[in-house]
Image (cartoon, rainbow, N blue to C red; front, top):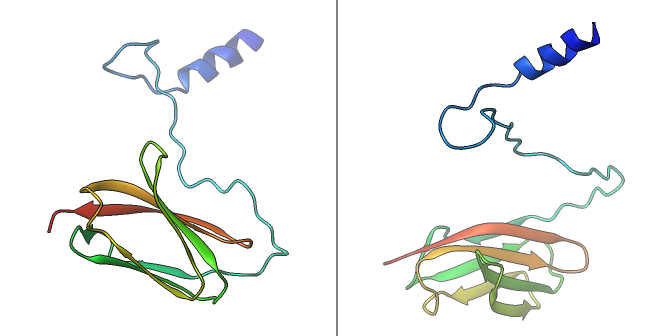
Length: 123
């Protein structure tokens, strides 16, 4: 009976056609919540625009709270290419020094950490 259960579990996987390996594909999981803190009701609304942005434009950052925050722009290898601290709700970043490509922009202060993909294209 135990042997039948193991056999059925192995058959539940979908066969993978193409490529090298054992012939079975693993599942891909997206949008997983790793933790929820229902006691923390604070929300942080951040707008970053335009996105995608052109290299001859400025990137605008608007947050709902007037607390100081730090902005970092990183390449896809995690190397920090830009960092600056802002003391007001609004921030502006000139994009003329950036090459077209995909980046990550991180905005954080003592209460939040926000990360978003940033796409920069040719004008």
